[in-house]
Each structure stands twice: as C-alpha cells, then as structure tokens.
Image (cartoon, rainbow, N blue to C red; front, side, top):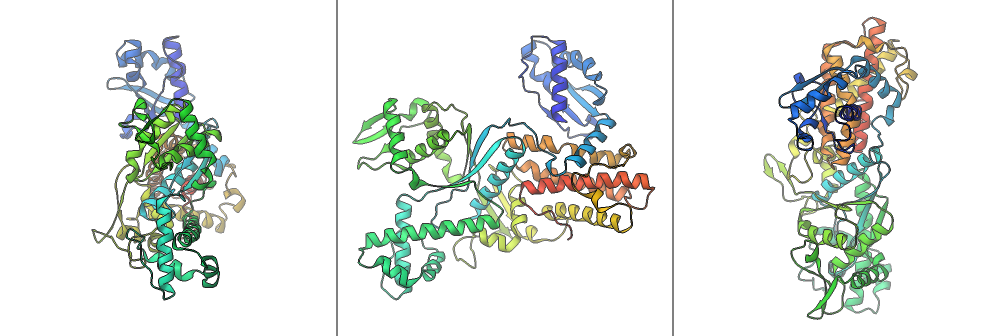
Length: 558
C-alpha cells in the first residue's frame, strides 16, 4: 500500500509540476501516530519546498485534486498542518488487500524493493577461542533476521561467518589447551600468562582422545605441540559454534576461514595497494595512507618484522567479497570494534568500491538482569553467560524476540524475570498466544462445520466469503494493520531495522485480540462467520510470516 501511495503522489507531482520534480525524489509514507490523521501520511510537500520554491502547503494543495481523483484507492485525502497529506484507504481497496493476503499466504510480504541486488551480511564472526557469548547471541538474532528481511524484500542476500583462525589469539588458544590437556593427564604444565581461563577448555581437554592426541604430539617441542592443539581447538570451537547457532535458528551460506586468505589473497591485496600508490615505508614497516580517505591516522599493513597485520587480512577479505560479485556488503560488529570503522571505510574507498559499498553496523552491549540486578556469572561455565546458557534458560524464541525489541545500536537490558514469564506481560508470549488462539478458532470452525480444513489452508484465498461484511471499526482496524506488513518488511530491510518487526507483530496481536473481544467469529450468520473467518486466517498468516522471519515458532497450541 505504501508503494501504491508513492506512485499516486509521484503521478500527481508530475501533473502539477511537470519537469520540475526529479522522478527519483524519495517519497516517504508512514502510518500516523494519531488515528485521526488517517491511515497513511506523507511529508513530501515539505521535502520539495526548497526545490520548488513554494510553501509546503501550496505544493500539497497543487497535487490534492489528482490524489482525490484516485477514488479507487483513497476514500479521503486531506492536508494537515504546514503541508502533511493524510490518506484514508477506500474500503474496497482494503478488502482487495485482505484477499491478497489469503491468496498469497506464505508469500505475502514479498516485494521487489531490492531488485535482486546482491548483498552479503557478515555477522557474529566470533573468535574461535570460546563459546558464543551474549553479544554474539544478539548479533546472531539481528544478522539472521536482517538477512531474511532483505531476501523477502527482493534482495539476493547471503549470510557469512568469518572465522578468525590466524594470529596471536589462536596461538594462545593452542598454548592454553595444551596446558589443560597436560594437567588433565597428571602432567605439570605452565599455563600461559594471558591464556584462556574458561572452564570450557578443561572440558575440551578432557574430551580429547588421549591415544590419538599422544600420537600426534609425540616428539614435538612445546611450540609445535601448541600449534597442533590450536588446530584441534579451532576445529572443536567452530563445531560447537555451529551447533549452538543452529539450535538458535541461525545458519550461514558460508563459513569463511581467515587462513583461506594466505598467502594469495593477502599478497594480492598488498600488491594492489602498492601499485595504486597507497603505501609508504616508515620505520621499516609498510603503511596504508588512509588519512587521504578520511581516517584519523595512517595504518600499518606490514610490520617491521615482515608479518602482515590483521588489517591487511581484513582488506583482503573484503576484496574477496567484492570479487565474488557482491554489490553491497553489510558487516555487523560488536561494540569493541567501533574504532575500526574509519580505516575499513577508507580502505574500501581507496580500492574504488565507493563510500556506500561497505556498511558497518554496531550491535551494542547486553546487560542481563535478574531481580533488577545485573547477572555477571554463569553457574555452569563459571565465567560468562553463553548463548547455550541463554537458550537453556529462556528458550531461543524468547531470546531472539527480546534481542530484536530495540535498535541494534542501543544498549539492551535483558530482563530474565520477564523473559521467563508465560503470560501476556512477556511480549513474545503475547504474540505467540495470538497465533495459537487463532489456530484454536479455526480448529473449532472445522469441528462445528463452519468451515472445511482445505478452505483454511495457506494460499486458499477468500473463497466465497463476502469481505464487504467486515465493516465494523475493530474489523477495519485489523485489516489496516495487516496490509501494513509488506511495507514494514521492506522498510525494515532497507533501513536495517529488524526491531520494526517485533513492534509490528505486537500491533497485529493487539488488533486481533481487540477484534476477537468485540466481534464474535463463530455462531453468527453463515455469511458473516465466513467473512470473519477469512479475516482471522489472514491475521494468523501475517503472524506466522513475521515470526518466521525471526525463526520463531508459530504455535498451534499453547
């Protein structure tokens, strides 16, 4: 519907101001906060005031006649305040939209907003040195949902996990695991000063096959033995991360290992920067002159000892993304990586990819609360709350929904007491209960002979239901809420705002509960019952589709 309004406004502007308005000028359409202001509104007149050198209200008045001529779409079009244009949708168009939901079923909400643009979303990418933590859990909920939103909005979206399996942290993992393995088998071992202290390494060391490991370690000095343990540790950690993420409903099209970049990818990146005149040698190190592209200081590519930096590997990895044909790349990082944004953006601009090719989004810290107090320790693992801990405590559906209730860049207080509640106070319970209640109504309709099972299936269409009988305020309010779904999905995808989804599903649930309390579905005249069953089915479909975008279960019973 939002796109229909944009098209109508654009056509009206073309009539009133031929050749004066860029056809590509953005036209924002939103749902007014006050119901009295209509079903949708646009501020396009304010946005064009400078372009047309006219007061916004004069622009709105100039296009009003053409908009009012569209009585096939609009019941009313009015001007408010300095130039807002408010729209009320014609009832026939609302019934048409309701029939579309019932006909499209699981496909309802899909649009061609992205025009097939190839987008990669890289997220989580936690170091393979330990279990996934709470920030990784939030990043997984955000990145996975964003990828699915993009795909639904018509983008060719792929998800990728970058395994950082090269460098000092991996060496330290190998040394730490070697020490724990020796301790487990009764040998004295010096634990590295900055080693990984978590109990998970003790468990891992105890799970290793002693016969196999002793054979692999036989005759090796400590450095070589630690390298073997590093490889074992990375393999086991990545396997565990995959298991935990799969249990969380998060999957990736590719797990890309950093070691795949060596030596060809890293050497290729360095040669390209050198050939482009983007490097300088200082103090025997080689630097990228990133200050030319807005960074606050130049960055080292090759250290004085000849070793490439992590930054050079990151540049090589993003070059690989570009060479794979991605037209846009979205990186989702944790809060501790904020300082790396400027250098990466500088690198992409220097390579000629443009300022907008790489988007970097930050997922902020999570504070777990119980009884109003911060939770800092995990009883089971002893040092932090892991993704596995959280799933065991509140369930994956609740965790995902709670993480997606706020913008990713906002700090999040995760209320464990609320998350554990099985009541309407818990927002995910409230939404899932709406779906379960609807499913119960539809089962009852079949039992009493008011409908057949085949008529209630997704994509079954409205059948012989006379949708024009849905004329009451609660019915119309629910229809209007449901028809917002495709625009909400497209907007959430384009603006990288999955949190819109949770708020919208709460709106649908609230609108349905109000409809259900005010309008009896079963037991009315057959014609009205069929119409209300059609509306009930549409509400269930939208709830199921929206929950599916978050990989949250839409239950039939609760």
